[in-house]
Length: 244
Image 1 (cartoon, rainbow, N blue to C red):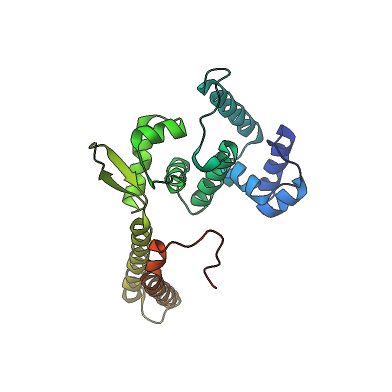
Image 2 (tube, rainbow, N blue to C red):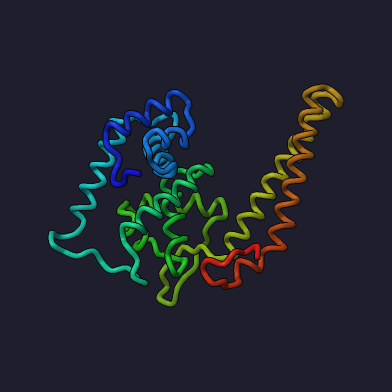
C-alpha cells in the first residue's frame, strides 16, 4: 500500500469517484489507499459537494509551505511528551477531526475538538489553540462558541486567571444527554402535527412512527449514559477490552 502525500493524479481520481457517487471505501480500494485517507481528503477540502482536485492540491501545497516557514531553517521540531512522533500525532488529529466533521461539525470546530481531546490535560487556552492550529484568535473564538452551544466544551479559569477550554469526562456525558433532549424535542414537535394533519392520515401516521422511534432512542441513550457514566472516570490499562 503506497504511503506519503496524495498526488494530483490521485486527487483527480478521487474527484471522479465522488462525482460518480462511489463510496469512500471503493475509491480508496482503487487507489490502494486507506479509506481514512480518502475520507479526510474529501472532508477537509469542501466535502462531497464541493471537492475539486485542483483546489485540494493547491490547498495542500499552501499548508505544506506554511508548515515549512513556521519554524526557522535548521530548527528541530519541538519534542512531544512520551516520545510521540509529531507527524503521526498531526495525522491522527486530522483523522480524528474528520470523524467529527462526518458527524456534522464544521471543519474548524472539528479541529479544535480533536486538538482538545488529544491534549494530555484535556484543556487549552485560546493562545495555545491558536499556536497549535496556526489560525487566528477570531477563528478559534468562533469555533469555541459553536462547541459551547452544542455542549461539547466548557470554560474555566486556571490559577493564573486564564480562560481555558475543557473537554473532560463530564462534558462528554452532558453532550450525550443534550443530544437525547434534542431528540425528545423533535419527537414532541412531530406529535404536534398529528392533530393538525388529522389522526390516521398517512402523514400523521408517519409522524407518530417517527416520534415513537425517536422517543425509544432518546430514552435508550439516557439510560445507557447513566449506566456507563462511571466508565468515563475509570482508568483502564491501554489495550484492555472493555467487554472482557
